[in-house]
Length: 151
Image (cartoon, rainbow, N blue to C red; front, side, top):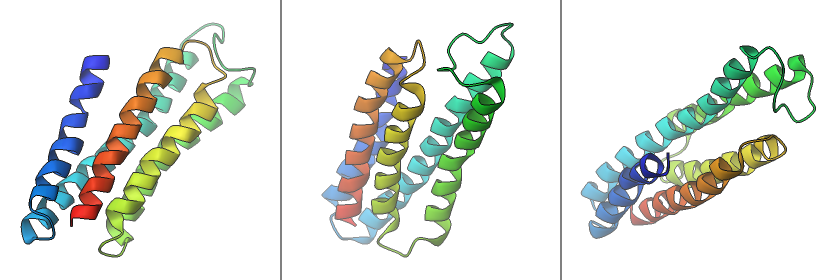
């Protein structure tokens, strides 16, 4: 899991480096757009994690790590929150004014990480995931911020 997670940073940091190299040129704008698209995809993936957890839990005969929530509340939280990151990413990509989209996406990646910690932190079995997620979200946010600065 860690290797794949860190490999997922290559586009964030690589595109940020390329955009910074071409600081304030049309090439920087091009690579900034690529990072924007990649960031939106990653936010959708992060929301899908919650759907996976809810689906896995629904298949269990007994709730194993729902942090004291009833079946209905857990499913409403997991499925509801699971769509929010992708919707936020879509709003940013579709409607954010030029020059602000990457900044907003960076803030959203960080915010989604904080909310995921609040949701998954009380549940059993997510400690290692959340530690990795903190590092990955911080570096992804950094890559988006560097890209936003460069364009």
